[in-house]
Structures are given as structure tokens and as C-alpha cells.
Image 1 (cartoon, rainbow, N blue to C red):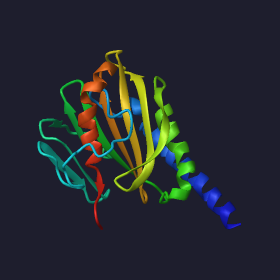
Image 2: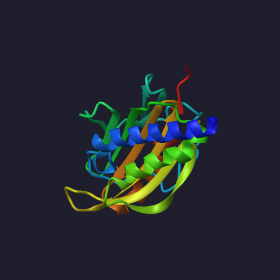
Image 3: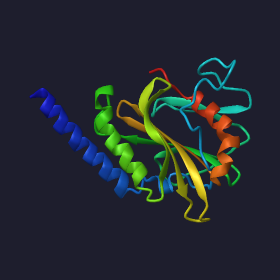
Image 4: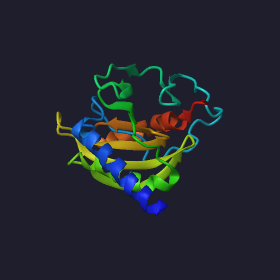
Length: 210
């Protein structure tokens, strides 16, 4: 009976979350406001050689959010932009090609490891809300900075320029908070040259102590 109740509650919570996301326009087509390709083709692995976990690499600036419970670092030379969406905590870009954002959404219930398979219904629908999205690799269940989540790597068509770009998209669950890390570059072929920088950003991600 307990398992049945938990399953019903999870489905109800996910239905609410999906409704909030899609009605609010939080699809990948509007995820990044600056043209660009994004992050690594695989989840980042210790890209900051010689940099202790949680330390800010040279030439990088740390960003932290106590409310969302995380911190990460991005290149100091990149421009920090103002986002109209209050759920976007950080939006930075390197010219018109590369950009990166972090979005935080508060969920009605915390997502635990046991609920990840059900939570993937939400992340699948967010990615699928961009009708031009085409998977480059299969979605993967990951752990980044100690948080469980999912990784998506896909191409998309930029609605303004018509160019094909790529998104490297991480969904992470920190209790009731769902974090989206979206890396983007245009055109798609530009990805390879920027991937090492995206690796450094993702590998700098860590959870703040409460």
C-alpha cells in the first residue's frame, strides 16, 4: 500500500511540474538567449587538473547561490548577462557563439534516488519541448558534484539564424530544487573548440554546505 501511495504521489507531483515547466515556456528552445553550442559530449570528469575540488581555477570567477545550494566557476573574461526569467540564476556568454546558464526550479516534493526513473519523465519532456532537438548521444543518468541527475547532448536549430547548434544539458536534483545547466554554441561545429572550457565549468560545480 505504501509503494502504491508513493507511486501515485510521484505521478501527481510530476504532472504538476511538467505543467509548470511547459506552460511557463521553460523548454530548451528558450533556454539560452545567446546563439551558441554547448558543453561536453560526455559528463565532465576532473577537467581542472591540479585544482582542488571546490577551488576556483585561475582565470575563473566563482558564482554561488545559497538558496539553490551550489557554486561553480566560469571564465572571468565571459560576460555576465541579465536574465528576464527570475528562475535563471546565472547567464554568461563569450561573444555570439558560446553561452551558459543555470536555472533553478523548486519542486513540490524532493526527488530521491528512488524517484529518478519517474523524474526522467520530466526531463525527457523538457528536452522534447524543443521540436528541433535531435539526440547526439543517448540520455545518461549521472552524478555531478554529489547530486544525481541526467545528461542530454543534442543538436537544435536556432530560430533566429537557422543555424544548427548543440546543447549540453545537465539536470540535477538537490532535494526539492531541480537545477538545469545548459551549455550552448553556434554553429554545431564550434563545439569541439569550446568543450574544454565547458568541462572546467561543470567540474567546478559543487554543493554548498548547509
